[in-house]
Length: 148
Image (cartoon, rainbow, N blue to C red; front, top):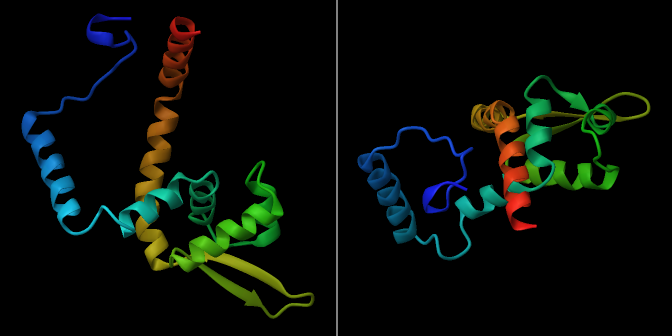
């Protein structure tokens, strides 16, 4: 552990006091508009913070897919959880559900324009996670060693 309780694996991007003040001002203005109760920001954070939504959005960002394709491609998701996730994303206006006129009927899911506008933000988060995976694993190991 380094000085002031930081780990040697801490790596920071230069953030100026002005940047911090701008972020604090944003949070203050959000709070003034009712962030303390049920709100869109909290709902969205809950959506992207669940176990499956980001993976489904990233997958549908490539192309529309049928339910079974999604089920096979999102490793570890159950049929029930995929259904729940897709319904929630559809309700939020991020995913479109289209019943195809095939026999037997099939359902195809795609991102809506709103979903595509959200995709770049989710992709940025995914890229950050991939870029920093080794650092995060190393930090976890160091933390676990010190705190076990």
